[in-house]
Each structure stands twice: as structure tokens, then as C-alpha cells.
Length: 165
Image 1 (tube, helix red, strand yellow):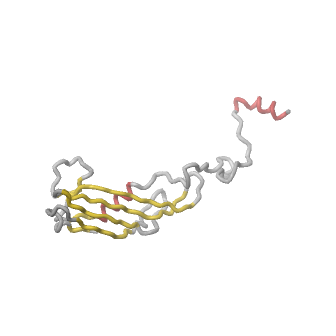
Image 2: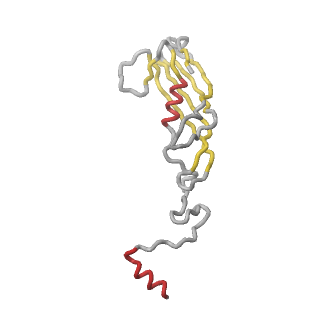
Image 3: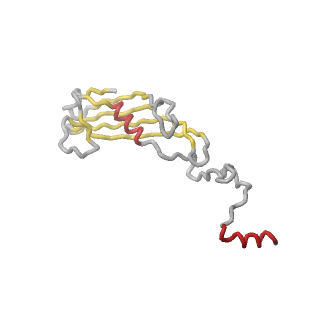
């Protein structure tokens, strides 16, 4: 979504609000497509002392799967983004400055890029998820599994002595 900022470019105190939805259902993460719902983007471009500040928030509900226990769950995802808009860039090393092209900025592309970069590499259904038993596959969140713990091979002879009692 292109936003024309010419009307506020040299008028301190003015602002432009925007609101739109993005479809990111085609974006794949680790073989899955977790963004099945529209991503709602809201924000504004504000002129403060002849400097244009862009602030936006992109949010949606993800179809997530826990990386420890494999349980599917819904996860709220909110991604804030801020930058300065400039007609020309003097410090090319700054990630906080976005260059205007023909007095407009592609807010849709900025929101898409930031949302994708902020996706988690590991997803958990809860911080204290215990995962699955590596031997029998039981969900350890529901309780302990019934399989015996493996004995260290160096202590196997001692374990046999304890079994005989």
C-alpha cells in the first residue's frame, strides 16, 4: 500500500493515518503456513518539526504448532515498527531511515518485511511445556510416562544388584 506524504511533507504537526489488511497466507515457515488469517496493519505518518515519523502495528492470530509437544494452538502475534522517512539519506548505514520515492512510501512492503522478520524460529504452547518422552512419545504435560528410565551403561551392574532386592 503506497502512501502519498506530499500533503504533510513540509507542514509540522500534520499526520496521515492508515489502516489496511495484508494476506500473508502464502508465506512458508518450516514447511507450514501459519498465517492463515489477514494481518491487520494500523499506523500513522506524523510530521514533527519537519521530520516524518512512521509508526505502525501489524497483528494477527497464527495457527501455531508447539515445537516440543506437537500440539496445535492459536498464537496472537503483534509486531510494532517505527522509522523515519527522508527525501534523501545522508547516513546510509541507518536501518531506521526509509527513503521516500516520489513523496510516497510503500507501507505494505515495510509491514510485510517486518512481520516476516519478527516471526519466531521456535514456537511453544507455553513456557513450561515439558514436550514428549523421547522413548515412548507420551505427552509429558499430561503426566509422567510409564517407560523406565535408561540406566547409564557404566552403572548397569549396580542397577542389576538393585533389581535383585
